[in-house]
Image (tube, rainbow, N blue to C red; front, side, top):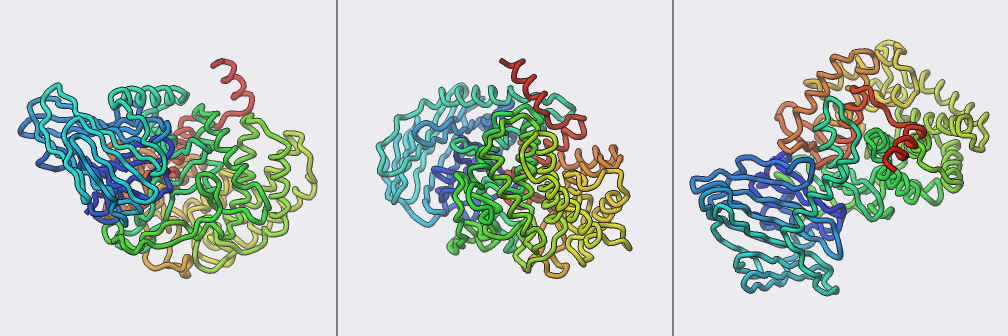
Length: 603
């Protein structure tokens, strides 16, 4: 059985990522890209679906582990009766092929070690043809070929490659797994020790660009590194998470594929990057956004693949048992084609944030935004599926209306502040109409709170965002009333549920789910906004305590079981951490003047 979700650390090369357990086993890796089929899928089944373990022969979890400073080099150490051993894992920057480098360091004594490599392509479904000789092992099936090169003899057959060896103090034993498409020539080997050094330099140089030095600097820097490792370098797209089908309820069916880029995260991601000095990454994300949404405004999707691909057909992998029995395992995501009106507002808001930050605007980008506004003008009053991609019937969700309002509000600002061309009087009138309707139909005066949808008594964590997008000022009594209602009805043990699934069968799914970490960071921001700073800081630091031993957060948390849930590492959780830290530290997203000054200083 795979470990708890928080038992996993991540390494990556900005095109894919691997999850490494406390026991030294890589239980998840998709090659060559994040959304490719996995060759190690033990995370969603058992070891027979593919894994690669390097650990003391006696087994057991590492005594301690950590990343080497502000890098993605993972160091796991075991204290054994025979001595101390360390395994250093990394994925060097991609050249013409993907590599996983694992180096065993003898720290003291003489420790018997064992490595076991089980390659199973297509999510554990395909057993490759394999052969081994001395310190080399090769496996091929269909479009995939992988080679293992080691400093010790490896014995292999069609089932696995195994090596047993002893590492002594001062000795280093290296392993390199290389993947390439099977029709291409075998790539040049990488020197594992040089790869470690190069990878460490890359990550230290990159994090050196962070200009946040506030109270929570360590946590912010680790979250930024996590966001970077979830970035697909060829296009600039940022994944929601590195995994699929890690459950929102253990044993349940709320298991989704998060290896895609969601539009709903656009603005918050830009704010996190711009607020910490990463203008280049913010610009790359904006450019990905513009390419992805180009085309007919009516065809806008809520998510896209790493390269902007739109078709993400959802299938189930019925040969996999699922994480700790949580079935089905899904690949693809059918909600990509849902109507989520908030997506149009999110795109317009994100481009507004980048415009205010001085990221160069273009005529084509403004033309696209005007087309999006034309669509929104004719459709904002429609019911939709909400930002939560609910699979129940469409409703008039308050957050969707508010984000439609935000789209027109940003358009008015573009004309008034940035001198762009557009029918500002008409946009202003639509903005005001939406505002009046939401306040009339989406507010429960008896309970003094906004509601999830028109005519409903249910609440929604997204209501915490109303003042953040400027729909109401923080000192409006309706904001404080809504925050209090969310705390009262959606906060078991202080962590915020997205909504109550059992209310009105709103999502059309069985079972329940954990508290969403991103929405709990929204509560931190809301508490700060209404003047309850001490409570905001207390809640923020409680959230920090949920990170695993290497600083990672999944999508959700189960307060009763005390464990993380959902796909991991989750970008929205780490974006929320960064933005809340910036807010509590008194730091905001840079303006265009700030960006120009910083660029001049660095130049």
